[in-house]
Length: 155
Image 1 (cartoon, helix red, strand yellow):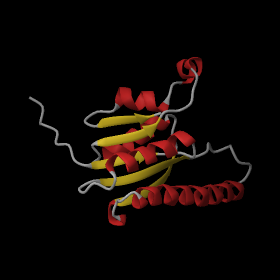
Image 2: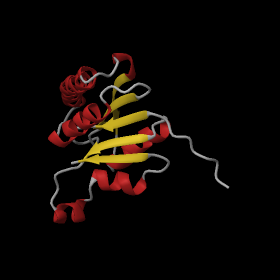
Image 3: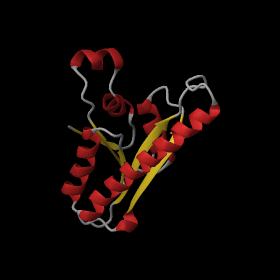
Image 4: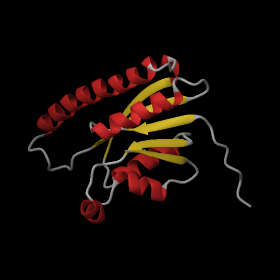
């Protein structure tokens, strides 16, 4: 018999720069309105470019530095949305991680596996049915492969 999994009130919101990701943050903020006991982490995975993507390592470092600044600002904006809706600042954290991701969904799920989140929240990508069939969808893959957690997909 499997060991019973205990759910907690830890929520991981996986975001990018899309409007759908912003809606996911707003949804959590409005749904929970700072309810006590929840801990929220807002995660952005920076997909490390392939070795030969940039002509020089200096150009790669420059791009990463500029991108990281943009990501840090975005994450802080999202954090402030939750705080303004009533979450205590001590329970809202942000995290960005640089890693090679052949599948963004897999990278998000690996982050979840390494920590203890019972809920993953993602925005639904604005793909057409044919694009989703051809390329897959991050949210669909997370729904299909997530284990021992709940997944909220916000449209």
